[in-house]
Image (cartoon, rainbow over all chains, first blue to last red; front, side):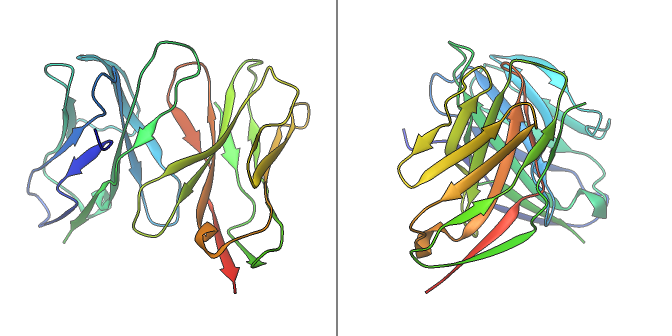
Length: 115
Length: 113
């Protein structure tokens, strides 16, 4: 296992289009997180899953955003009716929650540009 | 709400010298975790060092060490014997329990040969 992978790495779309990103976590990791990182800023939490259950969503996650983790393995993040303000790097991280101290491993991110 | 502040947008250090990156945070919790992550250009974030709030001893990982001042809510990162490969964005992060992490805005570190 080589770590968390994300696809695509880059996505350019026109305003109003829908886009979907995929994240494949490290095998056996039961937690999966989505973050958004805009230029010059640190990552901001969007949502996280434990297995297939979505446990928390940030208020940053508008109703145009939806995330799924149907079988508790990979996850998808969909943005409907994209806006220019959605342009950012979308990061996925995974962890194994067996103790309180669990390290989040990050993927390389998907860079979204909305024209 | 927990917030993390990194007051140094950019820092520069000469190769082989020591540099300290600052981080302060705000929380009403007593039990939490603090992290420093490194994000090289166009590469993914990797964990540099972590500190459990209940531990008084400062964490150390090879050339990286922290100065954790719980009462002052300060968590600085010291990089000794800086190397060219240390050049990156460094993010300080806070986590309560198993929850999500809150990140600072980052410090861009340049290492001069």
